[in-house]
Length: 127
Image (cartoon, rainbow, N blue to C red):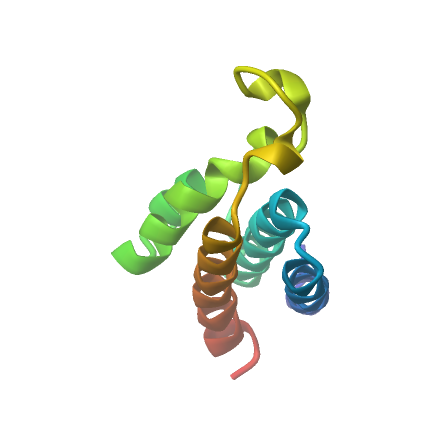
């Protein structure tokens, strides 16, 4: 994948995080957590594409570890990876719909964590 396409991935991550910020304001906490995971995944993939690194899957943690990115990014990825399925599917939780389980605190933290990963990608992909 070209370095120019890496920028496209990063720009989409930045746009997704704006949508997540609005979701938080509107109290859509499970959706905000999911959007943050998606934005961070796109940002880490933009970094991988920029480095011409072969990637597979959707785990931010695995991608970050394989590229030997700093522990702060890995830590953020570990938490955000938890939101990939649990925030979307009612059968991922013991009972009830995801929107009933996720909190403002989780959504706020998810935004902060996603922004750590986006900042890392911006630093390298758009110097």
